[in-house]
Picture 1 (spheres, helix red, strand yellow):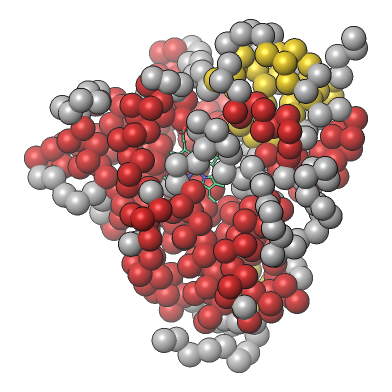
Picture 2 (cartoon, rainbow, N blue to C red):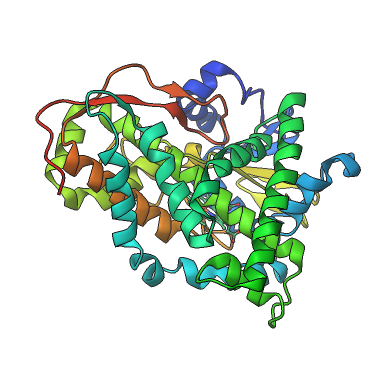
Length: 402
Ligand code: HEM
């Protein structure tokens, strides 16, 4: 059998600007294809991506980056966190924090998130502000920082550290990106170790204190695991949420009729959030390593080979979603893979959904008519897909706060 292969350049600016036509073309050719540039199998269909994420013989197996001495600060943060581990370590690390992100717990945070959202919008100039810089970014950063107990004065440190680290998840990171990621890993870990020492001396009602308490409990968490878990939660807890809101906002504001219906009908918001995650997923790519030979679609992924689930491609699969390239705010059912599926399904999904719903409701309540005032500026990466800047203005009349 000929192995289907594709020569996709994941870093090409035109592809990053709008990857969906190229992904559709490749999907029509074959659901799973060999990608020589990354030496990985790529999945283009919903079915194949779903299989890659669920298959128990395809695992998230962390491989340290080399040279080891150089990459140790970066490796240590990944080697010891749930997302890069499989059972039994995965369960031990995930169980510890799972309760804090359960739906019931998260629902209790609603009023606080609404107050933070309202506070941020209270400070913008309705005649012109940046939806990402002034709103979408600081909101989830503040929420996850509060949950973990990061003091307010230190919060501006979080996003730059996180951005420097996650830039390594793109294809072929450059030397300056690598240098920055290693430095950020070291500085972030040193900072979190300081918080761990403080919470060990004086515990508080925050997740870092819970993780510190778990060090001596049955889970027997090491200090490296506490630090890696805290940094995973801080990074995962805002990166995708910022981009989910930015991508969604550009999609909706590009079609004023949709924006008007969301403003007029708050009951559309929860479904719209799912549809926006489907339409332009903030996380496009997750990979697994075969622990034995595995058949995905009609190809065999050999033991040791890697397979990649392309979430944005899966979310536009016409065999699963009618009119996949259209935004249908009340699409139902909507089995998008934006939060993944299977063992590593997003731990923070209840928090992300609640934050996004509040962010939209508070925004549309205060500014029911919002318009883009300049071309939004995309971030350069494909894997973490988002906007750096989305300039908007309120088209009068805006509603008075409260
Ligand atoms: C819209 C926002 C978000 C999106 C689209 C998203 C998406 C995802 C996806 C696709 C995965 C699965 C990765 C895989 O299968 O390899 C994942 C895992 C994860 N997410 Fe999220 N996420 C979001 C927000 C959050 C938030 C707010 C948190 C809060 C802490 C969070 C924490 C995590 C963690 C800890 C994992 C790893 C779970 C595990 O390995 O068991 N995420 N996320």
